[in-house]
Length: 158
Image 1 (tube, helix red, strand yellow):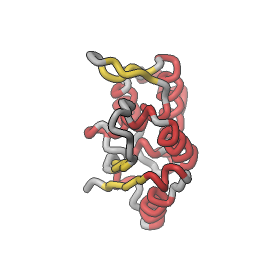
Image 2 (image 1 turned 180 degrees about the vertical axis):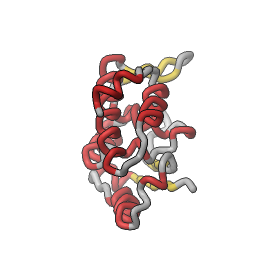
Image 3 (image 1 turned 90 degrees about the vertical axis):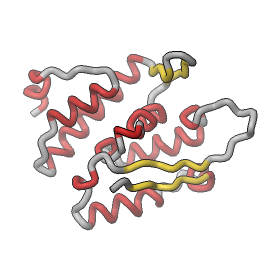
Image 4 (image 1 turned 45 degrees about the horizontal axis):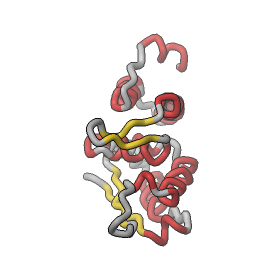
């Protein structure tokens, strides 16, 4: 079951994380965080002028909100609905990028590499706390961003 979290202009502009906190805290209290793997998505309602060509990930206020969110819940990518593109959109909120008409989103390669590796380290530790296998999950996450992680890498971090 997909969980949708609605974000509006006010919560974004006041850096209010309560829409996410309500959902996450409930899952944490009920011990259900790991059972909601890849089931979270954001519904962002942020009005733009009709002639504003920017994508949501190019709006500084929205990016700042996501930076705050990521600092509070750095393991959140575990919950994002990867299949619907939510992880790619989340990444775009945090990693410098440009849009190309023919090739789509083009992340800054160095920034993307740092972001992916940081998430791998965070999630490896976080999943270990729950006693969950992490290697295949982390390999899949890295592959979504164009990176291959070798099995020997995981021997270094465990």
